[in-house]
Length: 259
Image (cartoon, rainbow, N blue to C red; front, top):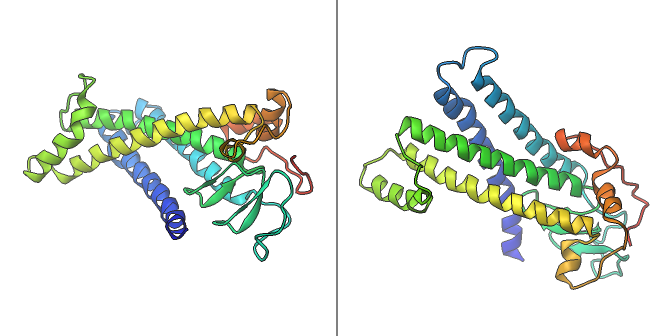
């Protein structure tokens, strides 16, 4: 339990640190270098890339803070009595010390449980995080190709890039900043693919009216309703607006129970 509590404190710092580093690299290193010729023009190609990056980053951070702003907890907290009977569809989280209504899982990167009120924001957070990481990966590869003349034509380059970069660094053959950028490429690749896969799996569970908690416990579907109803219950009636902008779209009555 102590290890989980430590992870619960470290993971948010890790996410915010990677986000801040990515924003600095994109804003002041990658885009100005790759598009150095037309960066000062108002409607240049670089301006379009920078605007797109700010847009997807705003969605990541906006949905991240919406997860925190709308915590998924029931009215009755079990902080003082963790062993008291729980209503169906609820679960007591030891890390949050709260009863979570329609609990799916505990997200260490937000130090919060994902449940009835913030599932939509969590899905959008994961989706746009995947886009930011994979986009940063592509731009980072372009920067390394332009600045350090690295070739990525061979599809096996990523299998040897990291060990060769460490080898060259220890023998003072490449600068430390180049090694740092190579490490960031692998971080972006790992986070991007993980978030994309997890979001797809999570949407399938939502459409089937299930959660990770019930799936792990081998419990049947919480309710047998059409997939469209289940998706609308999570994304709300203004789902299209919420898909493009980090705004609240789901109204949840705290008196409602989800059985």
